[in-house]
Length: 332
Image: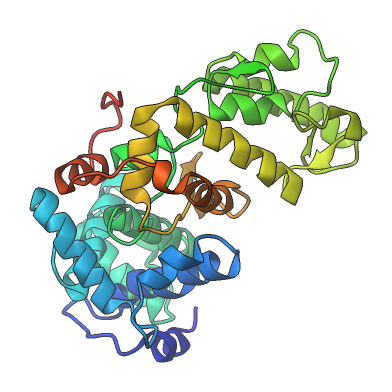
């Protein structure tokens, strides 16, 4: 990443004792995530709301942090504090994960940002360390700069908005156990048996995911597609690529049905409404922003479609939904 260019685009960055290690976290969000939000035709209104007229995000970040501090009294109140806290948190998490000293991880990250190699004692290449650092830094800033609809996200609201949440709904005359069950059922061609599309639709999210992935392995070769899907309501039109606009439109319908069917999902979405969506995950030890996810493009469309139908929440309720909490929290 060209930190000089990022700095010119986003405005001056006040350095702290951690130096450029803080730039790594802040610049990743300001430039990489901002660009993903704005250029991927996702929630442009929400993303721009986080910047002042000159494109500088600091004032909006501070306002957001102060609001959340008032909700539950735990967040820093300046952009510098947010960045420093995220960096310290990331260094601690990475150190715990790889059984190293926090200061050693911090020094290594400064070296990477400065163009040097990671010390061999850490047993990581520079890319892996940077990905781990950014992942943990972003997790610390969840609910302040963005929300992440993932089953392992830090806030209640983000986890509820994951496809994996048990939130049944009915669409196209079929009952789906979750948004994930809806998605995975479309990987099975019409007429499939053992399981059928309806079978997968009714499966818990994890089981549906397994069935859908198995179907994909067979169909991607036969259909000569990366990820063929047969859309509900359009089965006769044959398979389409999962990344197609038509797929996103159908998934948006499913997410609208999910929100309309459950008050707790509507409340979670309302709490996240002012924030842009950034979907990043950790899978099999890999940390990445999920660029193929439909959620950053579909959820803003869900917000537009539902509009005033979403509940108006009090500050206390917003604090409840956005407060970081354990993954086993009761959602309903």
